[in-house]
Image (cartoon, rainbow, N blue to C red):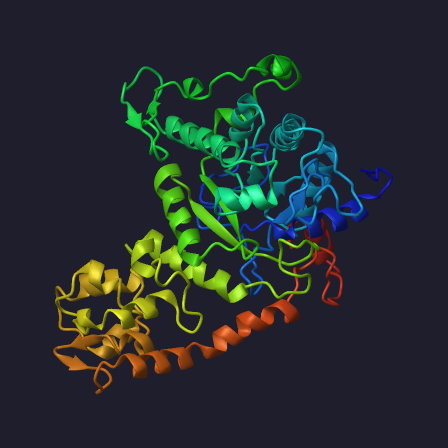
Length: 495
């Protein structure tokens, strides 16, 4: 594998930012931290400044690979070892300098850093750690950083990196072990889940009181067939020493304890993962069941779903040029939201008899139409849990309804002011015994009506593969450069 070292920073950026676009991270920061004197950047819990492509991919962070060289030959990956593509890498210093320059010019507000596997997992993870260490210590950058944990890397490296990152993630890649064996034989489910368990334990341990306080013990969610793992009050005890730990014995000398780590918990914004959709024949029911297990057993913040883009020629993959299943990805995100915030389970939304989502209806509408015996619900009497199951009612509007109905009778105009989407909810609600639509509940009618209302969104998602692209840091949109007193503001990131 030939790695090009003579490229300019801009040429490297064009290659490695383009290679990183398949790593999904459309997420808010999840942590709240103010900058300190002598530092630059801060992190707001409400999220950093985002822009999104129509297919849901985040395009606001500096999302880049440390390198697109990789020792693995995963069939689905555009950076696999057997692909004939230009290979290059950033040094930690190059990445840090570029990140700070972009931040000062208001191009970005944070960093999403992933990587191919260069030489070995340990070597790659150490380079990622060096990058974060320099950003935090040399450049005093306190902004949001999301970094990938490399499966197979020494636990000591993951522990050190986790004290400098806001969020870490380990890509599960494919939903089932069978899929991994078929497309990525060098990776195993155990190899991927081990760092996820370590990060979970570190997050849980860092939340415990320290300094001679409580001796409280906790229990982690066990894997299937695994005994619950206790959480000790000492965070270091949750990271067993690696047999190769001696190879990193000089890290403290080369990288003294980071000042940033003294003020930050281990991975304060939590961990996430990503699954590829459409590369292997798993059903939506299998994918959603795996996501549900990950939320329950690993305390994940998010599971991301990435519609497979058919780029590689292989008999076990969709043919190149096959459109990615963006609408299927969209339905999985909608169902994922129902799992996390609306009290649904995977088996309620799908089953072995009906393993795929209805592409014409969102999962909540489909569930409601299949359970008309539970509707209509009276808005003045329905429980909060039942209100959440009404299409067109979200978490905020359900809370507003429960709070407002204590003091007055609610009608449909009042519900609309609370944020209820009556073109959907009106079919399933009554106010004072009266329906919004004076029609009987009929499955065929409701399915046709709700599918027609959702048609424009479906067409927009299905057409986004051809009409949308990832934004580039080099797009200027033909804007005139700043002049006069705005010029120095733009230069120093104040414009």
